[in-house]
Image (cartoon, rainbow, N blue to C red):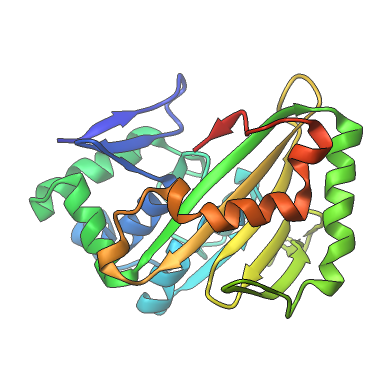
Length: 273
């Protein structure tokens, strides 16, 4: 069984199986790993790309395939440049957008058809396809917490608080999580040479885990603080963990680092995905 949903203009997509939700991060990784099974992609992929907050699942596929994987800021225009230049064949973002070089924009209907074809070729359920993928590449357990309509001065103070910690975080140990790098993401477009700064704060750990903080101004009031949390799990016996439980320690650590609850007086995020 395949369950699929899209938005009004058909550019985004959500894939589900029987009692099984496929995260957009996993979806694009599964698509890249299996594209060669579909007629339109039998010659392989030139490269792939993901937005920075999207999990690192696609990176693992690209490394195994020996192709380039580009990490871009949020915004489809960055994918567009790579598509126009013939650098990539597939791309995706964690906000339910997936695309290919057949068109310059995200295409939710195409993504659903891709999954339908994949199910027909592999003769497996959605859950079985994803579990098989995890067994081969490991699972990037992933979630996003949104704090919406945060007053702009408070939102800015949270980012500044995080920014001030960046120089001292590398090497620090938080239990099993040792900080490998801490930076504010900046992107130099390899096609037009433009530089995009202040695209989100990344804290990466030695074990492959990661926390990303990013402000989004798409709301009507204030700002939305998005916190992206992921942990790599190679052990197949632990792949069925609930994401919120598996990421519990990192969720607590993210709050300690950004103090969003303390600074806003809130007890939980408005949206958890």
